[in-house]
Length: 263
Length: 299
Image 1 (cartoon, each protein chain N blue to C red):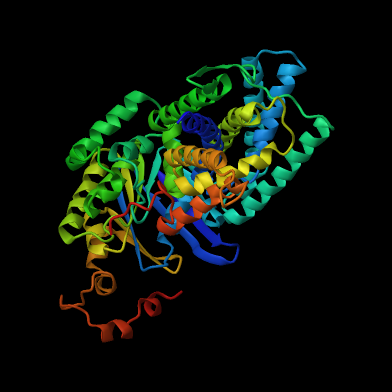
Image 2: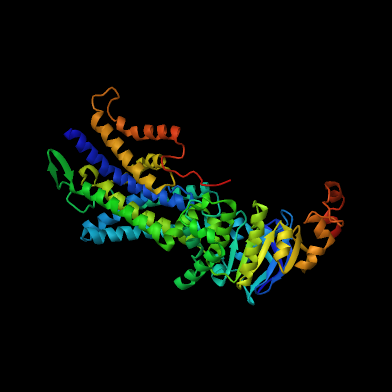
C-alpha cells in the first residue's frame, strides 16, 4: 500500500535527517518505526504526509508511493484526500476548540457528509469517553483523552493509512496499553498504521513488522516478533539484557548500539 | 444630561467604525500573526472606489458598496496570492514590512487618482439627515453604522462558528501544522482572511469618512485607522469580540473626552491622546488585552 524508496531528507539544505530509508506498509498491517530521539522517525512521517515543506525540510532523493502512485511532490491537502492521515507528535489538538469542533476539523478533507457521519460513529465506538466530553474544550481533557481525541480527529478523514507519531508520549502505563489495543482495533477495521514509538515494547507487541532507525538509516528490518526477541533490541530499546534483568547504565555505555550497527 | 446622551450616541457610532477597522486587523492577525499595516489604506481604497461608483458612475449606494467591497477583497486576495504565499514560513516581522510596502503603494495609487480634489463621502443617507428626540440628534448615517456593525459581527460569528471554512480558520489560528495535517490549505485560509478583512475595511471606511457629517474626505482617511490600534490592543490582538468591545470603548472615550475637555485644566485636544492612555493602563493590568487568549493547556 505504502512504499518508501531510498528516501533522503535534508533540512535547510544541509542537515541530512533521513539518509536512504526504504520501508513498506502493507494493507491493514501495523508497522512500527523505532529509534532514539533524532533518528529521523518524525521526519519520515512528515515526508510521507507532505508536511515537510512547512518545516524547512525537502526530499532530496527517493520516492514515496501510495497504491502504486508516486506522491512525493503532492501537497499535504491532496495526500489527506488520498487517504493518509497523520497524528502529530505531542497530540497538537486545537486546545481552545471543543472536542466536537476538533473532530469536525479532522473531517475537513472528507468527501461527503455520509462518510463523515460514518467516521464519527466509528470514532465514538473506539473512544466512548469522547462522547461525554464532546462539548468540553480539548485543552482541558486529560492526557489520555487528548491522545484519543488526536487519533479520533485523524480518523475523521476516514484514512486508509494512519501515521501515528509517539501516541504513548507522556501517558500512564495503563493508558499506553489501552492505546496499544486501540491501534490493533484500528488496523483490524481496515486502516493500516505506521507507528512511530519510543516505547518499543508497546509498539512491537501490536505491530506486524518493525524497522529500527538510527541517525537517519534503517539498521534492522524484521517481523515484530523477531525484533522482540532480538538481543540488542531487548537491551537498547526494552531495557532488558540477556538474563532478563534490567541493563545498568555502565553496560549500556559499553555497548553503544552505534558501534554494533555502524555501517 | 442631553449632552451626555448625545455624546454617548456619537461615541457609540464612532466606536462602531473603529470596531469594524479593528476587526479587519484582528482577522488577519488571528489567521497569520501578521499585523497588516496596510489596513488603513484598504479603508481609503474601498471608500474611494465606493465614492467614484456613486458620484462619477452615478450608481446607487448598494451597488457601489458591492463594487468597493469587491475591489478591496480582490486586492487582499491578490496580495496573498502574489506576495504572501511566497512568504509562508518566514518570520512575521518580514511579512509586516511587506504590508508597509503595500500601504505606500495603495496610498500613492489613490493620491494619483484623486488628484487635488477631495472625493465626496459615500454614505447611504444624506449626511445631515436624521431626527432628534429631546434635543439629542440621531444622525441617520450614525444609526446605519451601528446597525451595519451589528450585522457584520453577526455574519462573522455565524461564518466562524458554523461553516467549514470558518472552522478551518479557527483551527489554523491555533496550530498551523495540525491544520495542514487535516488537509486544510493555509493559503486558502490566508486568502479568506485578507478578503474578509478588505471587505470589512470598506464598510468601516465609508462610515468613518462621513463621520460627524463630513461631506467629503481626503487621503489621510487611512491614517485615522491608526486609532484602531489602541482598540485592538485594548481588546486583545487575537480576539474578535475584543476588537468590537475595544473599538466601541475607544470611540466612547474619544468622544466623551472631546465633549467635556473644553476649558478643563488638561486643555483642548486631550481627546487625541486619551485612547492611548487607556491602552497603556489596560496593558499594565492585563498585558494580553481584555479578551486576548492565554493558551489553554493542560500540563
